[in-house]
Length: 581
Image (cartoon, rainbow, N blue to C red; front, side):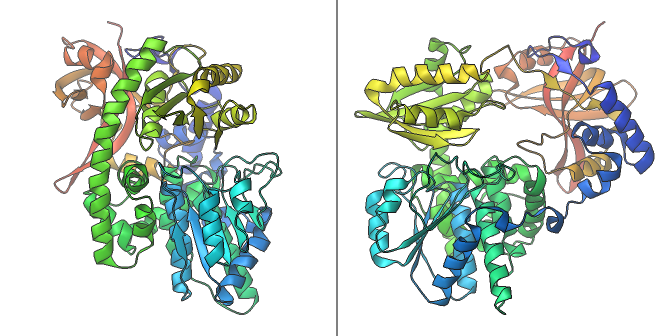
């Protein structure tokens, strides 16, 4: 039965509430723990039992951090790294150009600097070299270095790693592994085919962090002391959120602790980036994903590929400010390029049809640095996996984003093995590819077929899952602060979503091109402000703006709005349905 009787909301979705068992568990938890019922509803929905609630709300990294040695090749990887450090050998760090690659590189560079050592940073150019190690770069690095550490890349780079003649190569990665491993000294990757998959949710920076945990352990066993790793968790948190890794298990603890470290404002690069992003409050997962992450990414997308990694690694405040300002400018430029490509891609996808298992678009000269973001926008707009490709000459370079339950990376890898792609790989939710122009149509047809077998494109808009009902008078700042202890919220751990039943809209105003601001109440005095982003891209905006005194059920996520030193409750409105009169 639909929650509050909503079979089809203004966005066409059916509302689904907690089942009877979850409601019973939440009620029992509230009685046993004294925690607010809305928080207990959110915890019960996530499968947290009453006797686990306290530990869940205060996750301890020491309890959740896995033994680094549970990952294959970890011991030899850390041992070889330490051998290079002790022997003052020349080390190169080959990193991907996104946030995960940049933070992974910065972790190593920071650790080495604290040990009085340096390393060469190499980040390939997205357009000229593409993703991951390439043979000319690896051969050149091998001529001048004893050890090359590939971070957030390298698992599928058989040829380029073989080209690194004369140097040892260690791979620290998380992308989906193939049937065979490249000829590296060590490949540490929780997504190797011979791994259990228990740590498959780690991003590359978390894998690098675990390698440094193992390196510090090996140093302690030898009677030496390594750098303070807890102070580096700000970088791991940024990577985990920006790479959309699920915020479950150890990831949740890494981000929680990392946000505390970031709030101390000790890392010049992140301080400069926060200031240029105009962050005026303690950092949270939203800031990492939508303010800091895109700016770090901007260098790799349309500017200087290594700028993000260098910003995060620097200990010079003046240098950090200059780089942060440059990244902020590049991010503005990126948004303009993205808007143009997005409009063209959406028009093409609509012409092709938005109800297929795969939504895709390809265009002449589309910038490779924005196709991933545009694919993400298409996915969000259609609820289907999306691929966007920029064509240049005889080749196209593209990026894809998937929906929950559909493994895009495995399907892209399958296409590459079948010869329909020049190369391709990634993980479940995101992947990259290169394709010959003449094979574009058959490749997308085959990808559509593979994704359809996984259930992509079935049904209409996804159900809206709700954690419970709240009355406006109960939504107080202190309640939201308690609910936030169940966070951080993001991929794999959505923020609790509540319905406010049968309320009246007191005020409605269009903001910008497509957003809507309203305030609502239940007639008993309490009043809540709400913001709905993109409201006028759906039926929500027009109907709520011209409400005519009708009453509605409203659904969304609660947040604290800080303005002028005061805090108030705000609803991030996601959906609405007319209440029965």
